[in-house]
Amino acid sequence: MQIVDGEEHLTAASLFCGMGGFASGLYEAGFQILWANDCDQQACAVFRHRFPDVRLIECDVGALGVAADRLPPVDVLAGGFPCQSFSQAGARGGFDDPRGETFFEIMRLVEEFVPARRPRLLLLENVPHLLYGAKGLWFDRIQSALRRAGYWFRRSSCWVVNVKDATSLPQDRERLFLVAASKAHFTYNPFKPPVGEAHSERTDHVPLETFVDRSRPQPESEYLAPENKYYKMIAHKMAEGSEDIYQLRRSYVREKADGLCPTLTANMGRGGHNVPFIRDTWGVRRLSVEEVARLQGFADPENLFPDLPSPAKYRLLGNAVCVSLATLAARACKQALEKQTR
Image 1 (cartoon, helix red, strand yellow):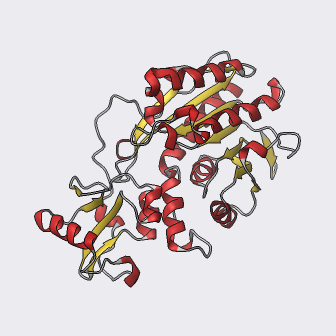
Image 2: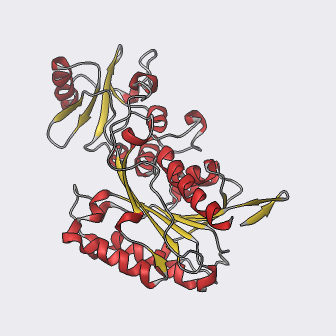
Image 3: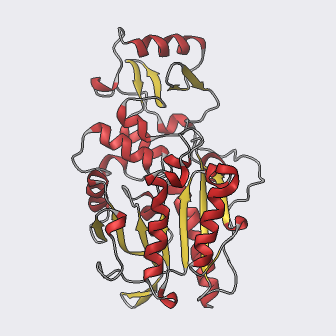
């Protein structure tokens, strides 16, 4: 804990912080964020814009060191480590992919703290396929590494959750949170998923139209020209369906007709597949940056970014941890920590 203005605050740090989705959730849950790290120059520019008082170390995680960078201990170390190598939709390289190997940089940093000063809780985020990939070997390696570092961790310490089920946001986005508890501070892992896996879907979603503004035109660059091949594909599909969101895949268009937005991905910033499109009075366009930000749970989307090109904004939003889910996970960690200190 840290004393701020005469009051005790639980502390946190964020690895792979990106534009600050995880940090936003930790902040909303009441944590004092002491430091963060990322190597993406554009992500760091946004993080500094949003969290000017948080110490941000801009470097590759492999170059980050507890002693060298004078990293203070924290109650919670959070990290949404790269998920591409564990995604069911990707090449599934797992830990043979350099992006997958970054998990072990988290463990290296944790072990650079003496046991009594290691984070009381580790709060990690990735894709659910991490639990099952390589016939369960990926998860086994993570579990073994966490236990060797002195943490209570097992399958029940994980939370598989969909944004549409746990929040009022109408986005179909499934994620995995893993929480490990330090044996130097706990006699067991106290984390309890804030929403159980076996539950009915929420019915109190904010309507999709609240997030999608069809009342005014967007910049001309957001619209597809009628002669564009993707325009023809999307317009043809829209003629068959309703006013929902349509998703551009590699070779076809898919309608998301259940009042939900499909999973928002970094590919939106590259003009690739998974780009979500809608139709308004002025034509066929992709979702605006502000619309995507709201669907990811970010407040005040109009003032979210410094001066960055539009593709970078889409990429960073697609890579971000959904703020609403991060807040729920952070609050569950806070409850576990406060219970332990009573």
